[in-house]
Length: 462
Image (cartoon, rainbow, N blue to C red):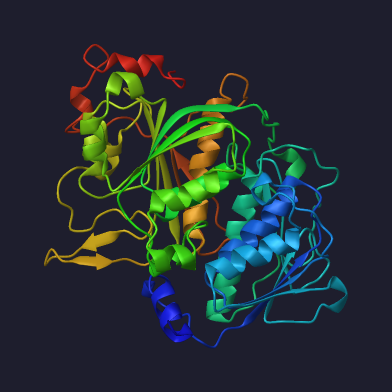
């Protein structure tokens, strides 16, 4: 396949967004790795490279070549080798390079991993739950860092700075200086990272038995994050789809090779998850959730938690009709937005309360999902490359909070989060609490006396 055809297909979903056009006139983006000593530092570099390579064809990384990678996924490799491997596998035609920090030259856009004194650079920083990002000289620096395994803040910061750089890249605008800090624990923001909650995550954390329904852009990005955490437990992944070229623009896992060989999405996710020896992974390719439910012994396999990353074949009503435990779900929109939701049985709105079960003219968007128009024809919707990782981070942070709920000083009083990446310098997450709808066609008829009793035995039963 010629490069022009690759980019036409790869950028198709991105270019479906209004006012967006990625073409052959690619600008150069420089990434200067100024911090690399902790897991958070290296996660920022790796994830920034991963997302960048899915929308920018020309990226130069300025990094020392003697830095060992701290993640088991790339044991024995140098950090710069990991960065190049990820970018080249994401885009086989990209112009990616590693350069010395002594030879930094000015390019169209620059991103600093760590603080900066420059007035024309984006920057990110993180520690644990806390993410920092901005443009121009950093006003508030992270000092001594812990050895916390938690890289939630790092992945969020990497995704957000991609959104900011993407906006500047597309609209050819220079942002005003800004400096923002946020904790993914409670979504509080501050100009001082020290004021935000940031408890240590136990490195022996068990996430229980999880069913993951869907391994598309959001689901695969979730699995990429999970592969970097040394947590234990089990995850059962259900998806009947295979990787195609357009899928490589918005997933942290899918590569050009996966698309060329039409690899099963669950198999591609398993390639990343295999590095976690404490995690039992079970795959269900060529199968949708309805078929999965028909074939299993529910009593033997009832999960502690369900993650819904799919929206096909009446998936929401199927989940709720089968009396699930806690359900987490996240979607992206074609207007730079991300939504997250949680359902605790009998206490919170269910997945049908949110999405409904009738045939919608406009189906709620789940990553690179489809929209059904008035003529009932399926039309592919747009997706921006950085939105799926953000949606995945929101779900993963909730999994951690549920796993740590007995020791975590974080109230679970919010079950719906909306945020926009359109203007990251000024926008903040909006969080709400949604009760069950009194007229929900499914959960309004469900009660504790008739519900499947296995949910009370789940790890996350509240």
